[in-house]
Length: 65
Image (cartoon, rainbow, N blue to C red):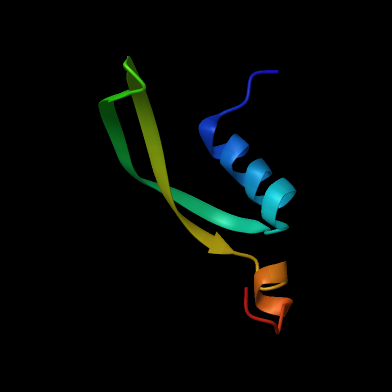
């Protein structure tokens, strides 16, 4: 299944947090090189600004988390 980064991000927020995304805007793409446990790694991070549906669990939940 080919999935855009935007669609994957929306899906993960829904599956993991129960949040419905109304819209999202790509804000930053960050390239990072780092070492951990004697191995070199390279990651590319996509960072978005989200507008959540007002019916999302985050707005409906009265308890703190």
